Image (cartoon, rainbow, N blue to C red):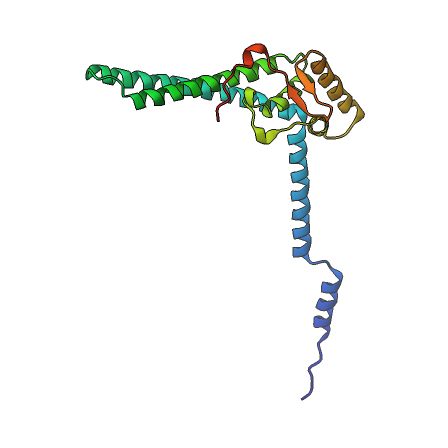
Length: 209
C-alpha cells in the first residue's frame, strides 16, 4: 500500500504549530501567575501592622457587643424563670438554681476578661504599642486570649509587626516593646517569651474553661 504524503498546507500548519506557543498553556500559566501575585498581595496586606490593628479594633467592638447581648439575654431568662415560678407559687428547683448560678459566674468571668483585655490595650501610648499589646492579649487567657496562640516570643512579634525586615520597622517594635517592659506592662523572659503583667484586680479573675 502506498503511503499518502502530506500536502503543503498540512506541513505549513504543523510548522506554525511548532513555532507558536500553545495558547491554552500560555493562558493557564498567565492565570496561575496572576493568582500567585494576588495571593502574595493579600498576604502582604494581612501582615501589614495597620491592617492587623484595624482588625483588632473590629474584633474588640464585636466582642463587646456580644458580651452585652449575652448578658442581657441571660438576665432576661433568669427573670422569666423567677417570675414564672413565683406566679405558680413554686420555688426554683435546686438544679435550675445551680444552672443559673453557673451561667451567671461564667458570664461575669467572660465580662471581666473583656474588661481586662480593654484595660491592657488602654495602657498603650502609641499605635505601635497598641499593636504589640493586641498580639499579646490574643495569647493571654485572662485577657480573653487562647492558649493556642501562645507562647508569644520576641521574634514572633518582630515577624508579625515588621514583616518586611526593614531596620526602621524593627527598631520601632524594639523601642515600643521595651518601653512597655520598663513600664511593667509586659514582661520578657530570658528565653524571649513576652507576657502581659496582670494588674492586682485582674489576678482574682476566675479561670473557667
